[in-house]
Length: 496
Image 1 (cartoon, rainbow, N blue to C red):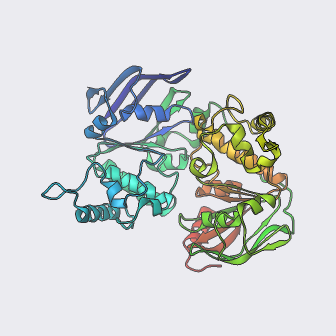
Image 2 (tube, helix red, strand yellow):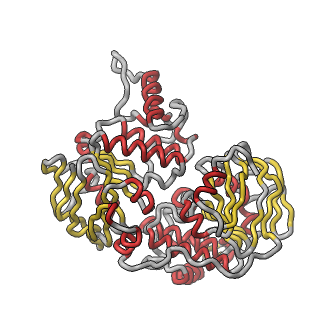
Image 3 (tube, rainbow, N blue to C red):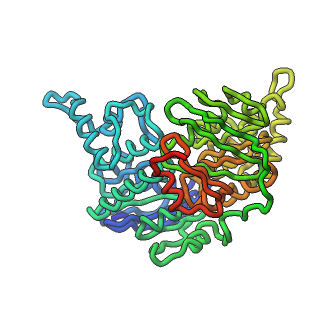
């Protein structure tokens, strides 16, 4: 279906792709792997007509092609669902799905009733229940992702490219997505699937191609390659154990944070948990279980409707981010670009943002002090960049995430909350983040980690707390937890 030969692409000062070959067969799901900065995004933009290669040839359906625009590629049957959403928040679900492909009546006017009906039927086929009249702005990130995929399904898809489609969904949504992709494959549609999650590559893909530093490392049948071999091909070295060993030290007896039946709107109900210094507690559950809402409530970003918080021996019926920071807490949000980073600023400004007082003199930012702090953290956390003045928007996802973690780690004295800490980062960056997390816990921080990756939960957690529909359904010791026991609690009807 798709053949790339000798594809190269240069940007000022950077050779993004160098002589890359890729073949995606008709009716196969083909994985594309590589660390952040390996050239995956540039490659799919070339396939989609958003960029032109400097060198090389492209064939689609056995014909040489040279797309002049994404529209031309789309008309030929190439559709891309990017990791960064391209939705209009104020329009409805139905309007977003059929944008540019509107349902019209005999007079040529947009037929809203038909648009909503068709959108509802399409979403049902995808296994998603959404009100077609709802605004996209009101949807969760996972539901927005399904709207993106549904929009691609409205066209005559021959090659579907998915860039990290499971980064914002988990559990049932992932299973439904995979089922839909397999049906498309059986119908003759080709799928190019980009993911950092190796378990998904093995579960879904027929073959996988690995890029590193803009070059082709190789293509393998997934049935003939091991996880360890793929990691070595991606990073160019053997990572050994991905997860650092658990510390032999025991947690402190006195909790540094305790909740007493707190509720947060209608998303979190009567939750009581304890966090102890020196341990990593994983908060597991399906998408929509209320985990992120609980994290935001603990940090004061959303109000607590009832119950109390106990931090450092003090009782609080309400919390605010300023108060949480003053108590030594930090929060790494799940969406680093819209909630975690100031994308128009550099590393130094992002690193010191929550504590401007320490870099402010006479009402002015002391840039030298700010730069010095950032330089120290860049070295400590091995952040790949040109220096403190590097704009965070130009960095890879893994290094952006390390900037956010480093910012909060330097301020935290009690509790660090990490919401999906390795979402959208490559396996090498994951290993670094896991190492940082374990070192922080060993230094005496209590870490609450929200993760939708069960492998990550099992590899990192000293304890696992499971939520379902806003309630705690159970708790497991990290060493005894299994995927089956966690999923049982995540789908249990009875709260603990």
